[in-house]
Amino acid sequence: MAGAQLFDGAGSSALTIRRIGVADLKDALTKGYRDFEAMPSHAVFLCVVYPVIGLLLGRAVQGLELLPMLFPIMAGFALIGPFAAIGLYELSRRRELGLAASAKHVLDALRSPSTAVAVATLGAMLLLIFTIWLLTAQAIFQATFNGVMPASIEEFVRQVFTTRAGWILIIVGNGCGFLFAATAFSLSVVSFPLVLDRHVSAARAVATSLRVVAANPGTMAVWGLIIASALVIGSLPFLIGLIVVMPVLGHASWHLYRKVVA
Image 1 (tube, one colour):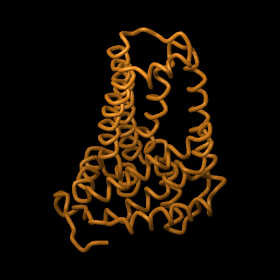
Image 2 (image 1 turned 90 degrees about the horizontal axis):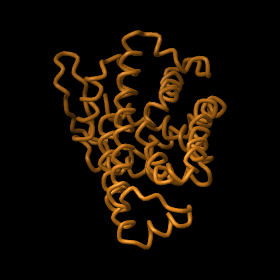
Image 3 (image 1 turned 180 degrees about the vertical axis):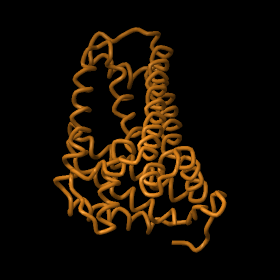
């Protein structure tokens, strides 16, 4: 961990932002996995809904009229991941403090009205980003394919990978998706853990998260790549791997927050 520190300018209660390196990311992942090992039943209980929802959404878009939205919906899960992992942060926080950490404790931190409001506000922010992303993805498909639906799944796959319109869809869609992911990541990388730990407002949590990214651009880029890669791997096959990937990343995100915010 580098010695340089930054302050978020909040007067006497200023939060200290540390500069961290890749070694800190590895340590956060190690600690996250240890939390998962110590609380596997709780983590599965919290995260099993994530792949189940994914499977249901996958089933819902089997109708050809929704087929082009399958990938945007699945990719968009990463945008709301920090909110989905709120219980995991609380379990890691309690285990770190030597407190009881079971399923009945996952929402204890939300008993404070101010914390509940902040978490709800952050969750609504991510949901808004997710919704705008889906509308953007739909608009990109409409523009590249003129709104013409494929006759079959096989025909859609062929058009995407073998036609000019398909490659435009891939390039523009992934480019826009990256911008949405980078925005959501920057706004939320430490926001939820910070709210649970310090009971700050949603606005201050977001501002601190942005300062964390600004102070550690390279390290945060690596962390974002780790998250994206892990989610892709966990999605194969049928999102089942997310039952392990999600809790490990959730717990690791708590430990990352502890490293980067003094």
